[in-house]
Image (cartoon, rainbow over all chains, first blue to last red; front, side):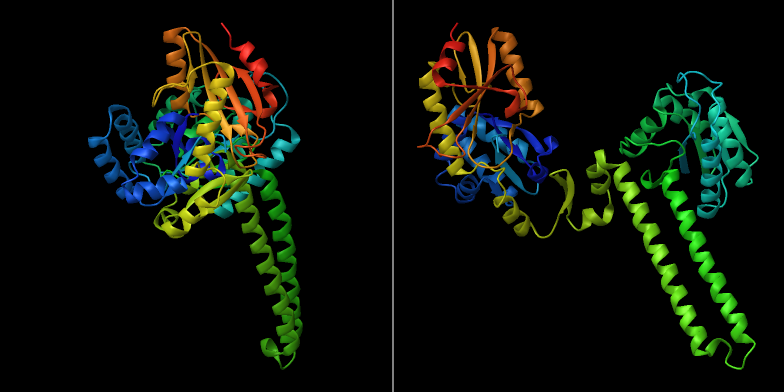
Amino acid sequence: VSIELANEKWLGHLPSGLLGQFASTKGYSDLIAAADDYLTLREFFKDGVTGDVDKVRAELKELAEEASADVSSTAKALRDLAEGQEIIIITNGGN
Amino acid sequence: MKLYLMRHCESEDGPRDDPTRQLTSVGRKQAQTMGQFLVRQIGRVDVVLTSYFARAQGTAAPIAELLGCSSIIDTPALQPETAPKDAWKEIKFLSDGCEDVLVVSHHPLVNELLKLLTGCDSEKFHHGAIAHIGDDGKLHWFVPPAVVERDEDDVLEAAAGVVEALEAYLQEAKGDGGLKHPRHQAVLSKVRAKVKKVMAGYFDRQGAAVLKAVKPNIEALLLSHPQLKEAGGEWVTINGHPVLIGGSISDRVERAKNSAVRTGQHEQAIADRSEAVLSKGVGVPRTADNSAFDLRNDNVGIEVKTLVNGKNEKITMSKDALGRKLAEQRADELKAYTVVVDRRTGGLTGKATYYVKEGLGSFRLGSMTKISLGDLKDMVKP
């Protein structure tokens, strides 16, 4: 599954709401596992939705600095896609 | 500059590039109706620009006359197939220094100009329709003749009411009571109510016409509205209807959490396990983190979508994700498949339903082939 980041437009299934892919299924699972110590990220991944975009981006930056190369690349991709958004939603595009 | 962009009125059938096609009798009536509408709405224009085609000139001339405008300029840049950027360049050149400009042109140029100038993409730029684009570059109103004609009837009805009131007044004025007479007040109240109803109906229809005209790009139009932006609102289309998403961030997050489009940890766990089951079942290994495909070997790349919740019978892939997969497919000469694992009824422990389609993209389940895991394994064998 391509795991993609979306904004609220995706609630109405508008394709323009999909901001881009940041992970494969496995990549997303690895990111979730690596983020266990990061409170905001943990909540974000639990719900698949957050309005704390700045905090999420800050924690992703920290995570990217200390994680393995694969997880770091996934974290960076997610951080880049989230820039400038108010609310972000994780989707596999199959909902 | 305030621009009034108009498609010529109804004309005789014929090829688009035939400059001799004339207006029909309906078209001539539409030109009068829309001209009178412009007189009421704006009163005047500085210049009327038109193509030299007979149907455009037949529209422009009577309207210019009604508006008291003697400056009519025809230009080849307003022919149907002109590139919108070239047409806009010419409009700006010919109307330099003008405040109010009426442009009469043709389909598809009118649609393309509207899109170029406002971002709105009107599918229904009917014959005789006028789009008013303000000097702020936004679409202020968009009115087809049908709406104006209905309003004409309503205006006549209201006018009849006013006449009725005047007659009542004259009758009453002969007596001692004058305007203060209770019977006179009763008639005036009825007329006020009627005029109010007509006005409300008029604005409702104007609104409906605008929404219908700009539906394909309603989101862009409404998002650009400054008050909406200040309120933090956004419009999305849900089941084909534009819906305002607004309120505080926490309200909006709650709304998103309650939707079926998110992939949280629970959904992800099911998708992850489901993909592992599929990988084992078809004998194609899972890929490393952040790879373009979910399963792949030297011959095939498989994109897997697991449906966990929601009622949408469609899987969607963004352009970005599709581009990455196509690049990998081309570089490694892979055969690509999209596989949907539908686990909406049984979760991870229940029975899954598999669908396959050769190729990549956004698909409806109805366009995919239902398949067993065994047959899928045979299908993806080299």
